[in-house]
Image (cartoon, rainbow, N blue to C red; front, side, top):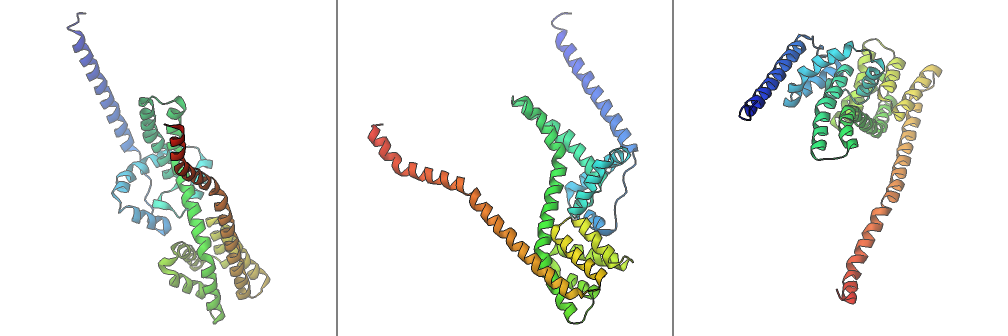
Length: 303
């Protein structure tokens, strides 16, 4: 082969490669389009979150691929991962209205797209092999870590607002209302100041209206949130229900205990903050000393 034919051969090879990639992409898109998609939730908290998320253009662009890939994940035999994602999604308040299979699809997609892109960038920047391998792994675990952050933030917000809700419930029951009516008044009065507590208590009321007993609805609340404060509150109500003791006194004591626990946690956080600030303060003092005596050292050394 002459050297004049070599560029044409390289161009032909590139064209064949591009054609093969286009054919494979078209075949994958055709096969992907034939996969049935997951149904869209329309009721409950998950349906509400999905309707709110659809107002964002980015979510509308990603919703259909996630539903199709989620259908593939629903056929896979990974019950432990699915159960873990479902529990985290429930504790975090059903963000974007995604089910467990859709979260698995998001994890797989982020691991493939973002991870491979990050690995390519790290390789192009001539970074070490651990960085190249770590990019797909971190991208694969990003949805899981994001759900954990949302669940912890929701639990903290619920623990902060629950004592106020219990106090308001005690006032209503002290005025002659029963527990259900007091809970309904609390949900109506909390408003936007405590949205997490309002959503959880409203769900308890909905379950009681659908026929579940008070103990069953509150036990579901404790399992759904996974918060220690909520578990103590539910335990006090259930114990009062079983033993027949006055519920107002139990709720009053529980509100005081939750406030005391919140104060202890605040004191522990303040003490931990003092320890964490020691190293930055020491570095700041060293910098100030260097700024003050630095010119004298330079002058004395004759630099």
